[in-house]
Image (tube, rainbow, N blue to C red; front, side, top):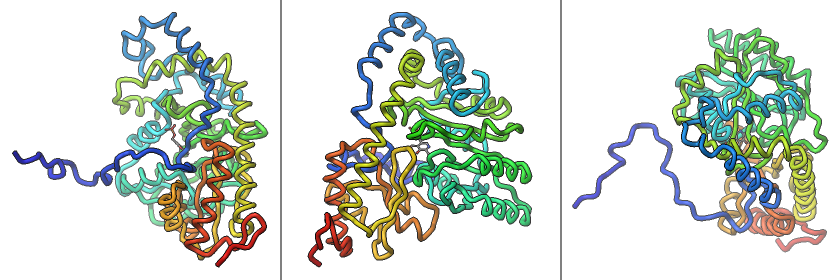
Length: 409
Ligand SMILES: Cc1ncc(COP(=O)(O)O)c(C=O)c1O
């Protein structure tokens, strides 16, 4: 019998087929995983048990009878948290719970984008969004970042250039608070300026606040959504970075003219309720305390990584000290092709994200790698960085010195 050939039956323009999962690398610095030791197992288990003991019968109903926007007690907690921490005044009707912020991004794109549309993005960026925009065949205008995030002079120029061509950006995608991968935090005046420009050029803003809970000082500027008096901002965030990515709980916040469109396009019959119910039980009791210890743990891991890089790479690499988050964006000299470095490191059991996948067509991307320091242990960080320096030296001849000793060339 001849095997059925699916390749001749699938639609055009699919992404390349997925590779089979072969497990994590020995030293895993990729992805946005969280710290395993931060997972508060017994509290989560107690919360799941308590809510199920009380409300298990409601699982018989799609969305436990709370409608397509998600479990009401979770939305109530989110409404209060957004007010307290991001300055956002919204109602539970402006919140749509999704299975992580990835589906929230897909919903925004589903509602807003057609092939050929233009989107403004930060040049160094979350690869997941860049891949989506490529697949949707959108034109990306990428803007440089400085220590305050997306540069507003470049935004003004980009929007004016589009206007001169009779075009508009569909939205400006920004990660203003602890940007991925640069970890910059956009100051208040820049957020206001972005809103001013968006209004002048009649475009929307898509604000992705994945990491804004993870700032060492706990202090952050208000969300762009909070400053927006025109209803043009769509906000997304997630529990992936503050609690656990495997829970798959994120959310969109938007005014009804947008949110009603997104709800109409959400075709999964509701996001998982057990996770939402557990979080609604957990968050009022434990979220703030948990976050305080998670932040300490992450800051310590950041310090370990920086120390390990200084010791093993010396002045060969450059980076700024992230004020929060889980990533370090590390710059190499131009003699190091970071895509090639990523390949040889991977072969040696050290997984790092290559800069070009986290950048929009820009030579700077080739000079960077992104390291996630949240999931490896401090010992693993030290060992992984030391092995990365060996691999880099063997392939590119740098670093010339490690731990104050010259290397053989
Ligand atoms: C900026 C940004 N947005 C969205 C996501 C998606 O996260 P999740 O789907 O786990 O909520 C990530 C994941 O790393 C991210 O870095």
